[in-house]
Image (cartoon, rainbow, N blue to C red; front, side, top):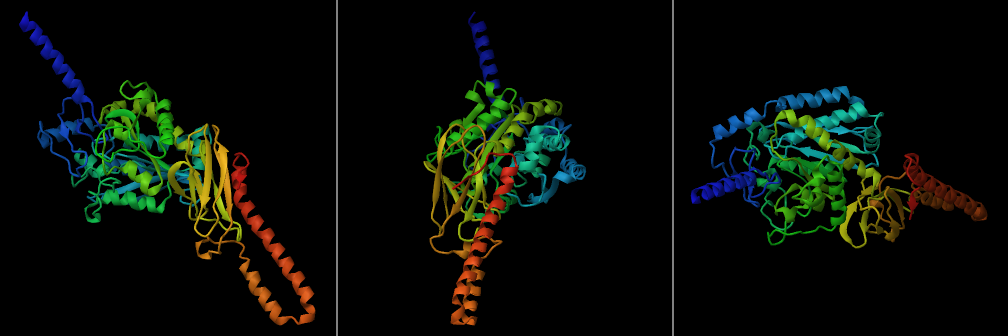
Length: 500
C-alpha cells in the first residue's frame, strides 16, 4: 500500500513539475523553455549574455527547432514578402531599413499610411516582432496585419481609420540572426530586451557594448516621434506594461506615472483578444512587469522614459514556437486587439497643435498633465501632439516652452478623443525657437523705419495710416495661418477643437 501511495505521489509531482517547466516566460525571466520537452534555458534578469542549455546539446536543440520552424518564413522569404507587399500596396505603403543585424541582415520596416513617407500632424505607432530569435509568431502576424490593412482599406472602417489618420510602422523581425540560429539572443548571444539603457542600473551605459539592433531602434526613435508602440513576444498570454523593474530588484507592483493609461491600453488589447482576458494567472489578462518579475535594460521602459513612447510588451502565444498550422488561429485571436490598439491613438486621449501668438508659427512645445510626472513633446515640423489618457477622467492640460507664458485648461475626457490647441504668448521674442512662418511681421518694422527716413515730416499722418494698415494686414495674415493649420482637424470629422 505504501508503495502505491509513493508511486502516486511521484506521478503527481512529475506532472506538476512538467506543467511548471512548460510555462515559458517570454519577457526573459529566470526560467524559459522553447517548447514542452526541449529542456530548460536559464537566464539572469540583469545579465546581458545568456547561459547555455543544460539538457540538450546545441546540435539537438537546433534539430528540434528546425523541425518546428517548418512552415515559418525564412529571413529571405520574409524580405521577399515585405517587398512584394510594397509592390502590391504601393499607394499606401513604403519599405525602408533602420539598420542591419550583427550578421548584416537588413532590419526592414513597412510604413502604412495614406501618405507614406510624408510628415503629417498625425500620430505614429510601431509594432516590433521577433525581439527574441526563438519567438517567431510576431513575424508572421505582422505580415498578416499589413496585408489585412491593404485588402480592407476603404472597405473596413478600422482599416480606413488607421490608414487615413495614423502612420503605422511595422518591423516584423528585430532579431533575424537569432531566428536563423533558432536561439533567443542575437548573433553575439545578447538578449536584445536587456540591452537598452536602464533607469535604475548602469550596466548598459557603454555605447561600445551596445548591439547594432539596439542602436538601430534608438536611432529610429530619434528620427520618428512615436506616440505608442508594442512588441510581440511568445511564451505566455498577457499584456505587460511598465514599470518592468524596481529600485531594489524585488518583485512587486511598481507603477509608472501613467499607470492608469497603461492599464487602459493593456486592457484594451486583452479585452479585444479571443481569450487573453480570461486568464486565471493574470487578472484581466494584464500585468505590471515588475509584479510579474523584474527585468532591467528592457525596451519597454526605455521607450517611455527616453522617447515619450507608450509601449506594451504583448505575450501573444502560450508556446514560444507553436506549430505553423496554428498561425491562422493566432492571427484571428489577436487581429482585433492589434487593430484596436493602433486605432486608440485617434479614438481616445487628447491631441492638438501649439502656436506662437506673435508670429502665428507652430511651436515645438511640451505638454504635461497636472498630477502626472510625465511630459511629451510636440512635433518639430507641425507642433502637433498626441497624448494618450484614460477616458472618463478630468485632466488639467498644460502647454509650456522656454520664452513663452505657459497656458493650461481643464477638460473632461469622454470616450472620444478631444482636440485642444494652444496659442502661447512670448515673454521675450525667441525667434530662434520658432518654426518657419508664412507671415513674418518683422519685415513691416524694417519697412516702417525706411518710410520714416524717406517721407518728410508733413506726410507723417499718411505714414501713420500706412503703418496701421500694414499692421492690420499682418494681424489678418497671422489669424489666417493659424486657422489654416487648424482647419484639417475640423475637416477630419472630429469635434470642434478647443483653442486655449
